[in-house]
Image 1 (cartoon, rainbow, N blue to C red):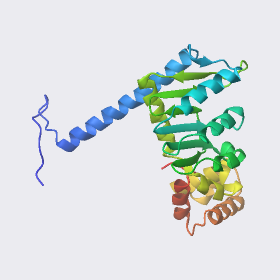
Image 2 (cartoon, one colour):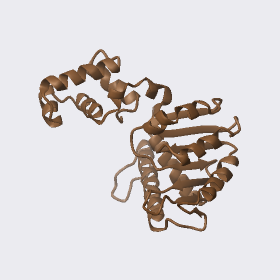
Image 3 (cartoon, rainbow, N blue to C red):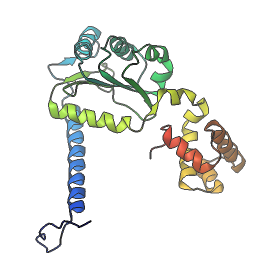
Image 4 (cartoon, rainbow, N blue to C red):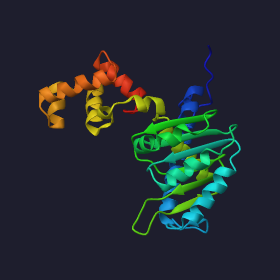
Length: 259
């Protein structure tokens, strides 16, 4: 196949179509990253707007959620971090969403375990649920045009901001999509034993993937060689893996390790 060559650059170098595409893709990703960072910086500098539910005003927050989720037509993306009133309220509203809408729920392991019954009661037609280990920012994004962001809890309470700016909503969608891609299906999460959900298990899996020797890994984790090997055997059994390589691949598949 012939290669199409663009006119030489100022320095005389020729750029091929694949190179141009790669450069364009890199620039797009950089712009997306800058957009996300600038949006989150805006939230940190201006946490309160005219559309903010006061930290202790549950009625205002509930009304904002009801208005957002009740108006969904095509798609709804939700990230839930902690079990509690906010999560319970969101899940109650999700149960009333029209089955024609595509719903993605991204939740922490705590929410998946504590609110499992409510998650299972949600309409299953176009619903996907994933679980992630990393820290989440609680958000609700509706149809790509509106969102609600719940802030960090303080002594005064937790602020929630309704977002209608198109660029800001798009940035939140990108953040959600990035975390969603690293999540594991709820069914896979429920198959994981408690041992695999610990920080120690993830530390061991990371060292198996990077090819650490048992001696080195045990020293880094400050455990005896015998204890380390016992943990490895238990983790491999939990993952139903016949080799350490397979254990690492299975861990990535389940979202215990990032790719």
